[in-house]
Structure formats: C-alpha cells, structure tokens
Image (cartoon, rainbow, N blue to C red; front, side, top):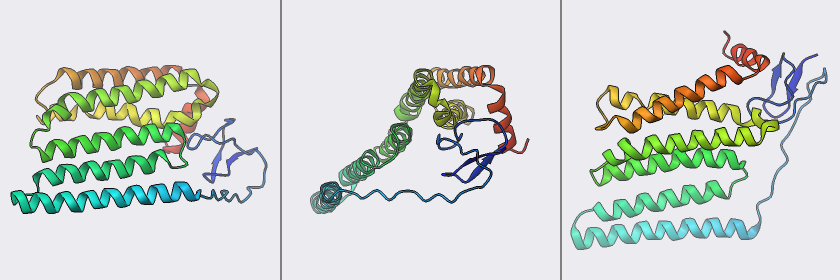
Length: 220
C-alpha cells in the first residue's frame, strides 16, 4: 500500500507517517483523494492594520526621498530609509502570515541577510555583513533548526528539509573566501565546519527509510 500526501500531491513508497515536504500526516488509502485547502478569512483589523502599515511606509519613502533630494541633491539618506521601510513591510507581512513558526523563522533569516547586504552596499561598507554577520546568522539558523528537531522529535520530518537547506548555506558560504569576496576567513570557516558537522550528523543519525526516500526523490 502506498502512502500519499494530500497537501503536496506526492506518493511515498516507504512507510513514513509524515510528508517530508510539508509535515502533514500521510494517507495510506489506495484511492488518492482530492484535497482543497480550507480558506482562512483574514480579520478586518488585521487587514486594515497591514494596509495601513504599508501605506505609512510608502509615505515615509516618498517624504524622505523628496526631502533628501531637495535639501542635498542626492538620494543617499532616503535610499537607506527606503530599504528599511521595504524590509519592515516584508517582515510584518511574514510575521502576520499563516505560515508555521519554522517557515517564518527560516524566511526571516534570509530576508534579514538580504536587507543587511543591500544596506552594506548602499553605505559602501558591506564587508562587516559578509565577514561576520552572514556566517553567524546562518550558524544561528542551523542551530535553532537542530534544537527544534531534537525537542520535537515526533515532528522532525516537518523540519528536515529546512535544516538541509540551512546546512548547505553554511557550507556554500565558503565560496566567499574562495573567490576573495570576503576579507576574513575565521567566521566563514566556522560556518563551513559547522555546516559540515551538522551534515555528517544528519547522514549518521537519519533513519534508513528516510534516506531511501530522499534518494528516490533525487532519482538516485
């Protein structure tokens, strides 16, 4: 009998209980049913709050841009403010979304990394982001995901994919040193070796049936 995820429309040939992608319980019935997500109505207060927040930030962008250009003839200061406004809009929409806490945390890390990198490029001083902030931001993300899986062992399948993606960000950041984009090596080396250690732990401690399912997904 084949297990089936109603949410992702994926069939599993192994005896997993939960979907590796979304973490939902698998259906082991022979007939693959249609599944429609329940529509979640957004409350009026939440809707007006989000729209009002977006409007205020857009006004902030327009006002600061106008003042900066009129007073200074440049857009240096207003560009920094505009980036901050856009980051706040994206962050608030993410927090108030219906995503799980794990998805919000994972997305917030990379959203913050992107914002800080753009901020560093605007002020023409981005090496503090690349050399220090990004490596430890990725290490923290992987550490929190690892702790979550250890604490919530029954739901570890829901977090496995995010942990693997986070591990590869820890490892791939080493290319910043390889291509001489970074000025330092110790922080990026710490991120790289932490990612390698976590990946080895996953390979050693992951159950055999889960490994087989991942290999099947990769057509290996």
